[in-house]
Image (cartoon, one colour):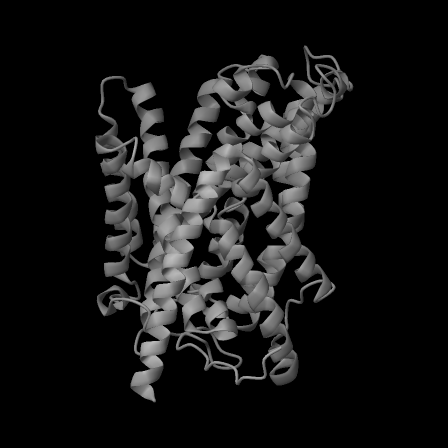
Length: 474
């Protein structure tokens, strides 16, 4: 390994023992521990779980439980690594700051701007999804008007004090968590035959209809790929932690409870669905696995109840993604990695970054109407594998920063990666395997290539900026 000197710490890196702070700026610390805890809980539960998991079930059958368990293990390792670095050095740039500290400014630039791009496009996607639900309830109303309304509400929310964002997410997350817990409770009662009007299904749906893996390994691979990307959103808690009252304690608590959250919400709910409903039921894809399960149990108003929950999940994701994108942009600018205007702070909030992130998201919505078959499809493909790229940066950064922390500041290792460095290498090998699986599947191959092109472009731009900056200072 190279013995070259470590790159200087990025500007956002906090002083030892203190909270993250950007030079010459003052981000608010208005998030309370209850906000952070609920953001961590709610970040696990997205619309992809409520609706998108139906396609994964149709591909993998009952084996989707294994797919979610395997991808959940990978996510746990990633969150543990990210938690170790974020607890040691809380920063609003999260993994982008850690990548810069570990690998150099080019890495922070690449990880940060690719994640900003992902979140900003996702804001538009979630707005479109929420608008479709509203037009289903109110036929004849234009989708774009609903998207514009949602954008206006959450842009305004994020322009105000950060505690407003925290309050919105607290109640959004509380509703999502309550819905999942209620669903699991009803499911367990039905599985055991205790729910009135139901008989215990046993293993009928798990081993019948073609067996546990009806489509073999290929079906499991499709389900695995779908489940990996369903976990996106967990990273927001480490971004939000930098604006909490006690960032180190907040990150540590959120990461340590990640395991049971993933096991309960994802793996548990998938097990309930495939035990109670045949995986071949078309309703699993058409209306979503949760609605299909509740309908099968003759729960009155199940469809509308779950539509409300999905709407809340989408709005919560919009709110969180505008927040995450604006803080990432602000962090990058604070480290000299973007236009200075985006880093301007007013009232403890990077308001220009909030506006730009929101406008970019709304532009993506307009492109979905103007150019759905080329430009919008191109945008969707580019963000297809960004979260995996981010996870690779997290793992590589943790490998390098852990050694540095053990040598220079071991007292800051409040959260420690399990079995370091072996499980970090296992995680990297798993990510490489996912990339290979994506390359094998026609539907995901184009996403892999498009994301690779975006990553390469940003890496070259970041490396060029780094070289030019070195010449100016040299």
